[in-house]
Image (cartoon, rainbow over all chains, first blue to last red; front, side, top):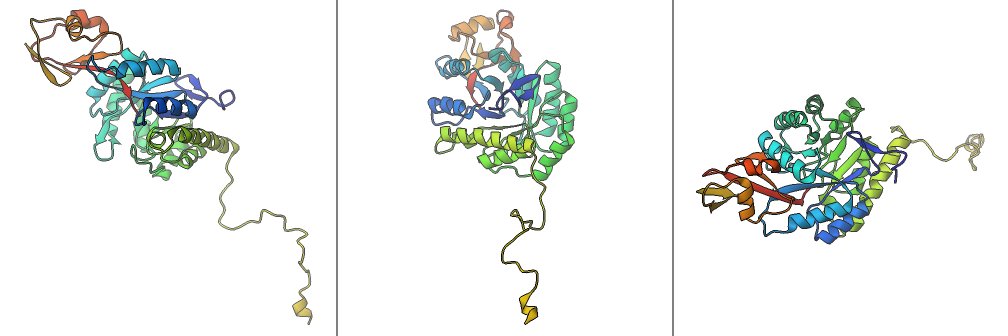
Length: 271
Length: 66
């Protein structure tokens, strides 16, 4: 683990893992627990939903959360307006005893695209109320800048729409964000379907990757969690090592000097 | 009076405060939070929050999420 030499710093807090994982969609709670453990994640996402007193899931999940020792990142998934967001965030803060919030304001039901206007308005209000806001946003530079202006210290642009597993759909925009916001922690959130895509995001210089479906819906979620842990580590190492510059033409790896069979004089010309 | 709890209509006797109402409905512990008419009500405000006819309550608890 890169905990000591290369921590992920978010809102003044240091983490050893650069992989954040969701807790939904697993075949069972037991598989979820094992997958989260195998992923090495130190930050997990979760949510709030209506519940009647007879349902015990909330209590059971709460017990697991306390056992896991993970840092909690409650989300506002499903909210469509800043007002809904504010209410759910306040409820989250009371239950989970954290002022961290993964801000989601959905602007389109078909691709679950974040509503940029709602995001900025909600972020402003949440920051005023003392929340540490991690917005799930699009890869638009101007929107991201306005979220920073609103007081967000971390941004979480999408790789692709939630649950699609399409990977990094707009690499130009994602590279632009990385280049133009060099001091902002950037986390790819959503759309990552394969460890190679997570590694690619890390190679681009992204600080971390947040995902859920790619692990939870794998045939073997625990093994896939491990694969993502390794991919994120590999990508980060590669970024720090510095990738070679791409070239248009070939360049031999093996020395050309003292190549056998090579003759200085062309025999065909002598005959 | 008639109120709505998590989207379902309920008939409630009198005009209870939120703390009493939650107790009647057997909510216990600290793993839930409440909004009345879409606004968050902090736990400390439950005894001072009077429930009115037609109020909508949302009572939420932790669930898995991405």
